[in-house]
Length: 258
Image (cartoon, rainbow, N blue to C red; front, side):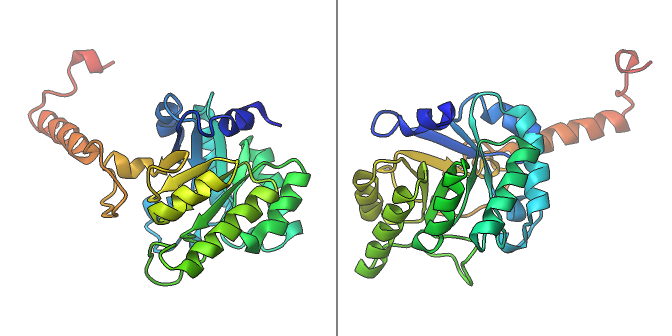
């Protein structure tokens, strides 16, 4: 087993796991200082490309961004999302995972779905490809408005089956997205692999958020997103100062000229 993955699994019930996204070397270098897992998420579709759905993201895009992120990640576990329509069957999943890992030198792949993809997870793991699962709200398959999962008993039962299926077939952890607190707690206590929540309560073994959201680079108005700094305000201040100095001929001075 990959030492970094073992380290993540060993944090279960001992130390909270910190996971953040990165889509470029510059952000990755900062995030790597603090995170246990750096995820190159297909959320880059909406964050960087203004897509209304992650289904428009393709493997080439994911690979190029992960190559950039890899240059900034030295200690964290680096995970790449397999985008929509890249793991529809076992052979396709294995082929694309091998390409992604070979070209990016990432440590693991993430796939969405529970029982539906358990045979794919099993096949990847048997071929020595570490897999992070993702259940609850799964953006690649959602049509229409995003909503929380696990309110009804039927949804709770499905979430439990999904989590157990992923664990049984070798996933080293599971992202729980927008699942209610009680079921997040139950699943986290039920399985031996870590759960990483996004809008899924403090009861998970770790938390993941989109870095661009927490620094205020996006205008995300999502219940579970906490903005820790308004980076747009800081950027605006710097750009305004540059503009003023150019207009007033204060920049460039001799110090900044050849």
